[in-house]
Length: 107
Length: 121
Image (cartoon, rainbow over all chains, first blue to last red; front, side, top):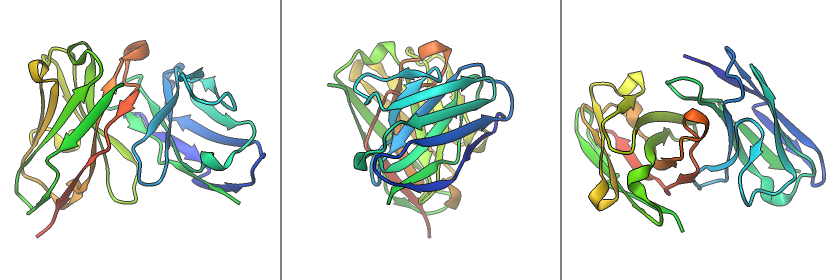
């Protein structure tokens, strides 16, 4: 199984900060990576797929990059609505696996 | 608008059984892969099972193989998860999600609100 490891597990940042979350795969997954955002008490929401393709309606302050085994999700200017937990997920091979999540708090 | 609504979550004893349902609307259900994902309380996301548009292919995470069965009724725009021999570690919120199968794999673009399954005596 492909293991997905996110860092950090939690972070606290201020409105306007640039935030970066890293996701590492235990083997190459090309660019077959998705990022989801989950707000407290809600279902996850897809933000980015194919490592860098932004979903419709997702603010342009979100961006994704990377290929192979290392990926990043960047929020260029943090907004209060961005609080929640972010998960990466690989879809190169089954079982499809998620990272453990990064909990983002607003200072 | 795409809507996915799960039902059937409940408190069940270890060794018991439960059937979850997911009713879809707002899209052509019969043309999409569909998936169940679960989330144990305070934990991360885990893919459980998925099925192709006509239901002829079904895939499961190892921990539920032989105990859970995913199925669908395209005439009723419905997805199901039959769960048997339930264990405490199956306690979770179970989400139904649509998979457009972008780029040849699971990328879940719409999710239901979840159904809570609690396995406890």
